Every structure is written in structure tokens, then in C-alpha cells.
Length: 104
Image (cartoon, rainbow, N blue to C red; front, side, top):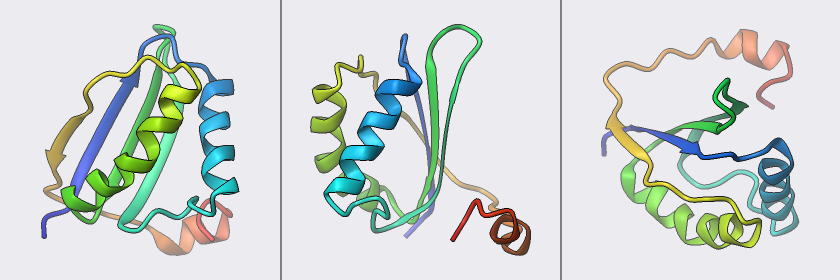
């Protein structure tokens, strides 16, 4: 299986909406999706919300989408088709990220 990068840009998405989706995932015990290697979300200068994931496979991402999409809709987040790319190279400084508390 090939690792993939998934890039979302949610038009006019907010931190409040993003956090609400994570709260729902945590409440369902799904804050560590099977196959998710890395995730980050951030506001963009243009007012949109950016999300970038690294997944073990496109199949793992698609399975998680069955849980994620209803939550995105629940919180009135305007959906767009994600950009999916095959990862060519992945570097992760595990020591540094664990030390900084980013990964646990």
C-alpha cells in the first residue's frame, strides 16, 4: 500500500468548527483513526481552513471518511473535494515531536 497525502481547504471554515469535529471524534473514541500517520489543521490568510493528513493508504482514508463526513456536515462546514497525492518521501523526527508533546 502506498502512503498518501490528503489536503483539504474548507472555504470560510473556522477553528470553532474544526474543534467541534475533533470533540465529536473524541466523544466517539475515534481521535486516533486507523491508518492516520499525521494530521494538522490551521487557519489560512484567505479566511479558509486548511487540513493536511498523511495516511497509510487511500483505503484507510476512505474508511475514515465514512465517519468524518457526517461530522463535517453536522457542523455546517462547506465541503470541497480533497486533493490526494501519493507520498514520495516522508520524514518524521519522532524524538523531537514526542519531546514537544505534539505526538503522544
